Length: 366
Image 1 (tube, rainbow, N blue to C red):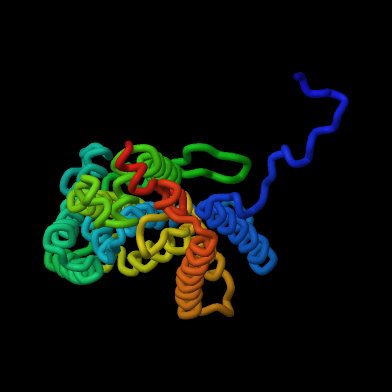
Image 2: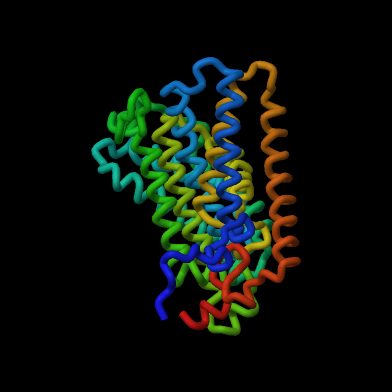
């Protein structure tokens, strides 16, 4: 029997939409976008010429480094670990790459990138081996290697700095290279590379088996082991990739600043953790997205650059605001998890985690 076209549709058959139907990670990303927009509006009223192209370049130049490190930290945190040595890896890779370019001015830029990434992978391999096979807690391992890698850099540098005049001319030109100009806003090549890397990695985490393994290991390592996932190799690979990304961030650090001291990259470990956690990556493992980490890095970079232009806010208060953001993000994540658990949303019942990451059953059936 054909439906009567003259009869109005039954309201009960219409699709319903509400906030509770949105996946949790999308809610976090949406809330971050709203916070970024709100921050721009507030600081535009407080700071003169905030919406200028110059300010955009300053934010995105720093964001290219922090976003890459946030992605690196996310990959490790998803597996229920943490890497506190990323700042030291940035310093080591930036200095050693700069030293190499000083001695080999005709080296191809891709060779410099490969060297920086390779150095990061080796240092990440040390971290991953101790965590995955030595079974030492990640926070202890990386806290130790944070100091160890920095000491290695101090000994290697022998009280000498890398300066711009010792580097090939293409390096400062690379930092100023503009990919596209929209109105008075320049989108620089380094920023575009960072965004491309993050979206490629997001595809890997969401679509490829290795990415699903990361979420499975972070959600429940014992269950992942029972279904045949090589947990130790997955954790090791996460630290290697994290180190490689930190090496890439080291190259970008060299490109941006040119002058590199033995203290290069110091403090970036806090910024990377903050960006990942503020972006919705759970410290309990098994959930989070690289897009969320990118938004978290954007918010932090925007706040840092904006607060620099507010004379009443000292550097100590800027650090305090960053700490408050971390606390708010962690507490918000815990409250969201409790609410989802109260509604009966769980990875075991749906074959996926509450944040949309693949569950153990979906990994088994993949």
